[in-house]
Amino acid sequence: MASKQPFADSDIADEAVRATCDDASICKRFATSKGYWTDLYVQYFVRQVGERKAPEINRGYYGRVKGMNLLIDAFLKKTQCDCQVVNLGAGLDTTFWRLKDENIMPKKFFEVDFPMIVARKIHNIKTKPPLSKPLIETHSTDALLLDGHSLDSDRYCIIGADLRDLPTLEEKLKKFQINPELPTLFLSECVLVYMTPEQSSKLVHWVADAFPTAMFINYEQVNMNDRFGEIMIENLQRRQCNLAGVDLCQSLDSQKERFLSAGWESANALDMMTVYNMLPQEDVARIECLEFLDEKELLQQLLQHYCICWAVKDKLNLADFSFQASHKLGFKHQ
Image (cartoon, rainbow, N blue to C red):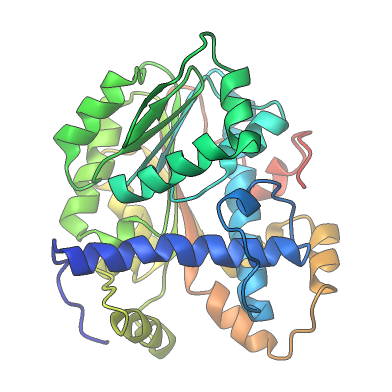
């Protein structure tokens, strides 16, 4: 396997991780411009569509977005929206605005990311009425609580914090009225892999300890011990971006074990090829007509090296649903 350098707590290492936020948003902007799925809000974070992305990348992001949305919406359905969501390393994600439009908002939606990314997102929210209006519409007073690295309203809160600094993270979430007694959904997408195994284990252990009824959905790399995985690691290292937590991305079992060893009652994991094949096939057929894909084997390789893992610690049988069932829940998936 390619050498894995330890996570350096340095400006260079952190800047390389922050750059992945832009990468994801640019890819989502392009894929939505081609019609893979509808996102009315990504345009306010990424103005230009940008250069063409390969069809396998677009299909990969389609699977990622649809797979995450199905589990998020299933959690909201199960709890009847009497819950809260915490998106860790949220970047320029637009899930809050989608849920507002579909009228399936949790009691409160929290986002956490590096202060520099949060400052950019707050600026976009402040200066783009389509982003700020939904916050104001769901807020009970005239003014939002706002400073350079945090914004708080009744239903949405964004916090600048380093996920490796758990005492500060906990302090800020408490400051903005997170309620540990509510069922809570934690999300992370290609976030834990940039933390050392010790750091990510402490984070998921803290969540399990602090929230009696919780679910954690993690999207990231898997099956990284073959040649394709080595190439992925090497490509990121050329950009000074080291996968410090790649040891936990060796298999679906290692992904699940991260949670099971940290106090979670159950964990499931599926590679993205499996998820892709479980998505509503009528829509999959639609998006596969958008662009010609020359090398289907490349798409299969790519999807087999990412996964969704979800873990549960609960009294509400939150895990009692599947990808096959979740798209029948009655929500409109665009």
